[in-house]
Image (tube, rainbow, N blue to C red):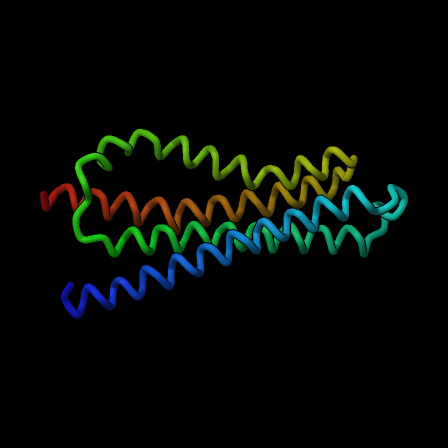
Length: 153
């Protein structure tokens, strides 16, 4: 391995560690959110401060999920050559986009289960913004990268 490849190797290890940490934090946040919804008395869920805390936790969850996506794309963009099998997997990108969208919609659905309609609407609006920014920040650079790499080959 050349010296520059070793530097990339260190970078990819760092990105992998950051992604693992962000995924754990996202899982931790959604667990806290679920525990709060299930363990708090139903009457306290209507308190404004409780709803602000739940909305803040939803925002944190979306941030960590966004960070995982950005780091994954950033790591992918450092790859010099794309294996031929990846070209055929381009058809699965819409499936990943739908799964990414559905994962973010889990929080508004949790709010709907407990009849927190305003919170569900706000969480949906926040997730929609995160989703649009995610597509612009992740999918578009990936599409340009793939086009450029395919043109080189």
